[in-house]
Amino acid sequence: MGGNVIVFGIEPIVWLKLIFVIVIFLILFIIFGSFIRRWLKVEKKKRFSHNHVNDKHQKIDWTIRIIFIAFIILGSFINVTRDYTERIWFLEPWYLLFGLTILSEAVRALMEWKYSDNKNAYIFTLSQLVFGMILAISILRTNFFGMF
Image 1: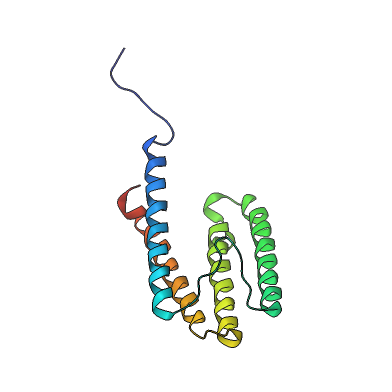
Image 2: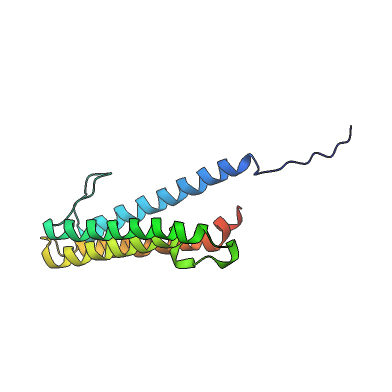
């Protein structure tokens, strides 16, 4: 019996690291959002609810969602038949989800700018979008700040 142990798969500590990164991401996002909300005097919305500015916004938002769901399904069928090195990058689900988030929040900001009573609401939405994207991209580009 040798002392060398070969382990395949992922380390058990990876789940703890992942939970840590998610918690830090959420804490930073919540602190930033509450600071900007107070600074711009924007009212707090209900958690885990999707508030539309008006019916036009709801129709546009659902149209965007349906189109992106179709692209995710279509992209999955196309990329699963290709070799891993020949996949079409813009049909990968994570790129499509980034695009969905950016487009959906940009439409929300536009609708808030045009139709909302509080004109600072669109600034809050855009600042939250930019902060979230910068944070997510920096976490992904740095391999979770060297943790993985």
